[in-house]
Amino acid sequence: MTREEAFAVLGLPPGAAPEAIRAAHRRLMRAAHPDSGGSDWIASRINQARDVLLG
Image (cartoon, rainbow, N blue to C red; front, side, top):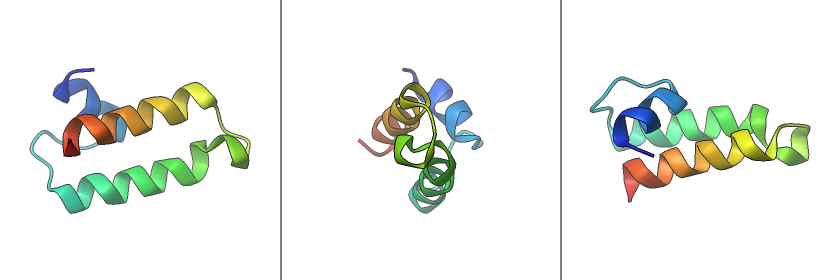
């Protein structure tokens, strides 16, 4: 996943601050987490996007 794709997955503009990345990740994971009835694939993409941007 590229950085551009990661920003798109999290719905953030390029160059977003780490705090915004963490907040978007938390917000999206609340809805997409498999334990909450979400999709494993979507949750893994959200986690991958966070890792690409913060890693």
